[in-house]
Image (tube, rainbow, N blue to C red; front, top):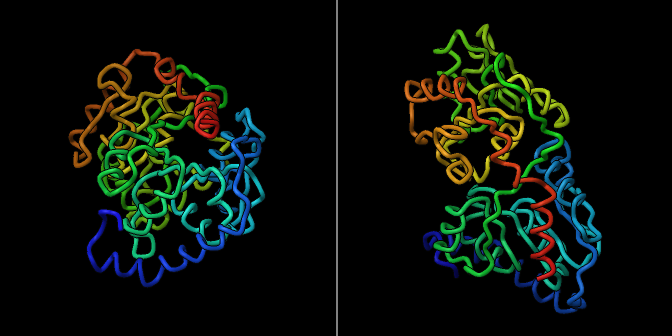
Length: 339
């Protein structure tokens, strides 16, 4: 057992899940192992991810791969196409695929760990046990890598990669007349109350929120009635570049992130990031030079001056993130497949 969870968590995994994996491992013995030659690669996501960030990631990574790569979508993650190697855009997908398609254990597997989302079904014990069956696990920042190793992950399989975005899709725009932007799916870890407080206490600034499911926020009706606030609900990903061009400052207030990728997208669009110190934000934002950072427990009184400072910053933000492209990221993943 990995060094994770309490006894009850480990016992739950043993009774309800581990035996299923042991059967899958036994079944995998009847399939032919992959050869050293890696040609066909499948990037795995769910059907419902197609029009959201996970879908965009898999399409772009497979598009820029030098290997024979394709993207596979299936909500139950069954009947994966035959391939030499697989890339899973989310850690729980790999867990599910081990059970549904045991043959993958004879192939090369790379898993992206986005951020911790532990649950009774996918506990620390459960997920770490599965991740240790992968060839490589991509962590979006160095803090996550250390965290997973401390939980019992095999240190040699974890690689830090700040994922990527498109330098072409997200075009440079000149700042000067834009507002303040946010981009995320609704959830408690997105720190919605801070967003509410910023909009309410900066009435002279225009705010834009791009995302999904914010109707579930218990103060959304009040937020949506504020005259300086516009919500872009469930819009196509292809419209994001034009929406970022409306923003001079991009705020990421999350309490917990692996990325967040929208910060990279906004920076590639030349928006000034003002972000909480989570995920890869402390890795890619140099405070006062290409953006501003604040503690995850900061209140709006602390963040407002940083937003105002963002409007005064003259730096070319896009130039500081040009290394984080899909082309470069896909090349690094290809190297892992071929290593």
